[in-house]
Length: 330
Image: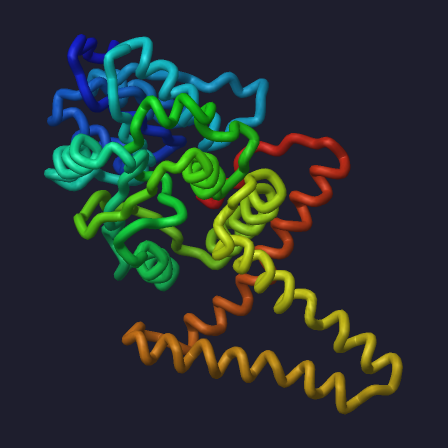
């Protein structure tokens, strides 16, 4: 059972599925703080539940008769946390493949204590093993986001419990990018999402194969499409990501139409947009000092096709009224 601290200020919700040693590291980083802690398991087939229980976490097992998502797991974890420690003011969400950096909880709590307008605070997430694969390095680059007021946070963040509950928590049905969707609703209530220049978590993506990276991009595209139609005020930057994915992945259609109509020069001009975009992305990567700029640029373009596939899956599911569980890449 979880530690029931009657005057606790911060509680932690960890979500995971078959995280193995990554979960062990995550639990260790939290258990040392002596905070109320809930672990939500999404159908693990390893010993994740036993490991969490041994670390004095309240263990919640999701009912697999319903599609499980990270959003649903976080909501059920928050509900269990409130039952354990009803006086909580703040809730720290963390994924089971992440380790909380020493000192983060205190720094995040200080921000929320001193700035009542801030409803969610996050810091810098970094990859623990960026050298193990090119895809891990891409994730590490993805986490490199600017500090200051933000449109959204990621899966690791500390939120004001009252604000979280006031908007109804996460949307359980969101497959991915549930955080920007929630943050849009928080910002609609005049709340501020703040990213501070402090190390927050170490993440272990463990993406070693192209197929994993492809599925991760499919999940992202699904999330873009879901949130774009559901959340008023959804970040324009996220809408732009969906628009770019559709533009570059569907470009072959007008190219083929132009060829069929005998408009050869137009078809060639459209086709040349690909090498031009590749060159632009490569130059941008090099100017920012990222290694393997050409490979980064190539995967950026290829990823648009995966994202569009995810968006199309979302569209089909919406038309058929079908509910889908999380799209897993590990």
